[in-house]
Amino acid sequence: MLSSREDILALLETIPDPEIPVISIVELGVVREVQLHNGAVEVTITPTYSGCPAMKQMEDDVRTALLHAGFESIKISVVYNPPWTTDWMSAQAKEKLRKYGIAPPAESSADKASITGKARHVPCPRCHSANTSMVSQFGSTACKALFKCNDCLEAFDFFKCI
Image 1 (cartoon, rainbow, N blue to C red):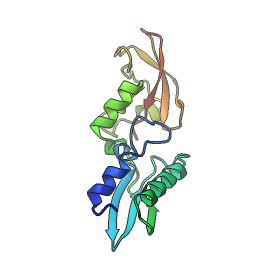
Image 2 (image 1 turned 60 degrees about the vertical axis):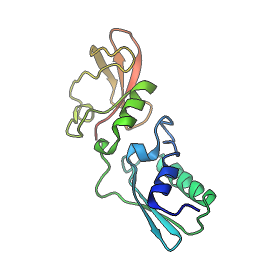
Image 3 (image 1 turned 135 degrees about the vertical axis):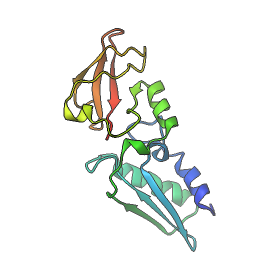
Image 4 (image 1 turned 90 degrees about the horizontal axis):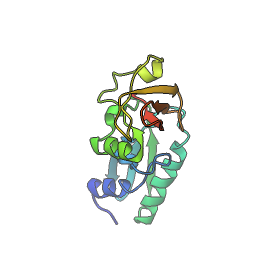
């Protein structure tokens, strides 16, 4: 059985985000805390937003991974405060998103342009052109906006800065 917080985090690092399988739930910043108490484990997670449909799957995946690792006493706590922010995403996760074809969020969650409707140009993750335009506030999931590159003509998702 895993015996340290670091071992458990390494295990959770293998769980992909259900909607974006190229990044883990740890890289996404959803896993907030891991605690061990006399052989019992508690994992605290925060949804990317309160209505995220992937949260149940994430909880189930965490529980399954911990059961397979030998834990019998598992507590998964969902906390909403502080609210999740794209600032919690690792730089590696943002780069994986870009390589996967999703424009990663800006460096800081202070950029609210895509959720306030203000025009912005997001670099195309395929050809890197800044000549892009938003097609829809919502892309393949509610946490992403749909953009189009005006140069290579490819559509792509942009992970909204929250």
